[in-house]
Structures are given as structure tokens and as C-alpha cells.
Image 1 (cartoon, rainbow, N blue to C red):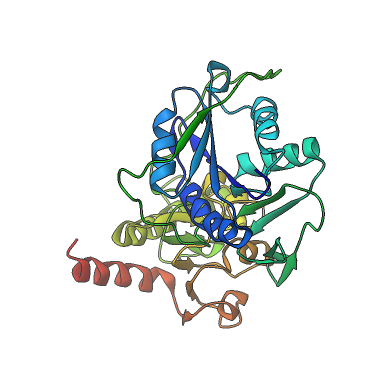
Image 2 (cartoon, one colour):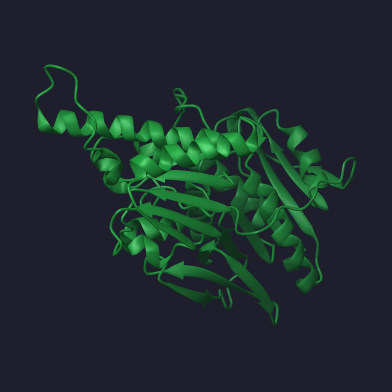
Length: 344
């Protein structure tokens, strides 16, 4: 159907990302403007239950490609199937993730169209999606269109759009489609990352920067003399304050690139242009100066709270609330106050 808006449901082992349902909700607005319906694309193996979830979150139709060869996400196979299904659609929307950025680009090449990535808002004018997205490390917002080529492919930033309320028992048209596709790669194994709240889905994030290693009151263990080793040890103690505050808030733990590059925490924690791009309801920055790379990954957070001893730190320019002070005194005090307030 020429006015159909398709939504790719991003999932891992049959568990959809929350951003997929947010994208379904956004697709409804596009479909209403175009006078069409919303079709969800569900790819995988043994994932028919996702089809019912898609109906409950607003899909009118689900195209289900359920095949053994789609059990694991492999870009070549998934792009082949999605390109086949999306060729006649007016628009293809995807939640923004590492997988979908790759997939969107490959599908765009197959269908000779363009991609507008990481949209944080949009409107529909004269049958065209006008997407708003950040550029120049988030310093500016631009409005971008794909004027003639179809489908218009847009990836939507997670938590930038509200998820619709699920309507239990809602039904739609389920169409099973061919999922056959070749891929020259194979998935050998998965390794679980450290436990905790997902940065991409978190409503609240508490992040630490290089400043968490600067506690002058800490005395390193006897025999530890290497300066770099002492710095990392102090940072690890500092990140316990970050984790403590995050636990009190039920939040995810993040970090600046400087903290990751210094070896304080693994890359999986990194928030920024070269890490995770996040838009939580609340973002708490502890000991983060606010380099451009970091701001690009979190400046669309709805409320930013910063604690830093440097009153000139750039982070205060984007913070809704800023505290100039010693994080090693303020973070524990804030954690204790929150535990009492929240009864933890």
C-alpha cells in the first residue's frame, strides 16, 4: 500500500526494545497524516508472540518473517528481508540503535532512498516527513526531508517519543511472509554485559567522569605506588558513589568518555557521541566537566543535574540544576537523603 507506514520491531531473542513501541506510537501520527495504516515488521525465529504485542501497541498489520535463518540478527539477511517488505511503503520508521543504524543504511542502499537518523521530533507536511535531528554534537537542530525517494527511512531516538498504552487483546491482520535470505556471517556466541538498568531504556541515569578519581581523602592500599594504578583504584572507589546514588534512584549507571578511556569502567557505560546517546527524564552528572562529545549524547535529557567543583564547567550550561561542590561529600549525603525519602 503506497500510504502504509512500516515500523521495524527491534528485539533481542524475542524481547522487543521499549523504543520499538515508542516508534509504533509515532508511526500512528504519520499514518493519520498520510491517510494510511501502520504495519509492523517482525523478523526472527520463534517470534510470533511479538506480533501480538505489536497489535496491542497499535499496529494494524504485522508482516511476520519467522525463519531459522533469522534467529540471530545478521545485517545481510535482515536487510534483504526488510528491503523486500518495505519497497512499496511510504515510510519506514525504526528505533535508533546500533543494529538499526546499520540496517537502515543497508536498506536505503537497496531501495535507493535516504535515511534521516536519530530524529527527536517530526511533522508531516504535504505528504513528507519533516524530521528534526541534532547536528554538530547536538549544538544545533535541523529539519530534514527525503523529498522524492520512497520509502522515507527515519530512525527515532529512544525516549524522545512517548510509548502508547498497550491495549490488551487488540487484534490486527497477521501476514506470514518469506524469511529466506542468505548471509555470509554467523553468530558464534553472545557474552552478557554487566547487570543493571539499560542505559538506552533508563528513565534516570547517574554518570561519573574523571572527577570521581580525585578524592584526596582516600589512602591507597599498602604497596600500591604506581600513579596510574592509584588513579584507577581511586576512580573505582568513586564509582561506588555513582552506583550507590543510582541504586537509590533505581537508575542506570553511565560514564563520560574520559572515564572510559582512563580505564575506570568498561565501554558499555559510555554516554556520548561515540557511546550511547540517551534521553532520560533525569540525568545526574557527577564529576563530569561537559566536553562536547559527552553533551552530544545526553543534552536532550529532560532534566539535567550536575555536581562539579569547577564553577566554570561547561556541564552547567546545559544543567537545569547545578551544584558547585565536592561530589565526595554531596553524593553520599544525597544518597542517604533519597534512601530515607524513598524508604530504602
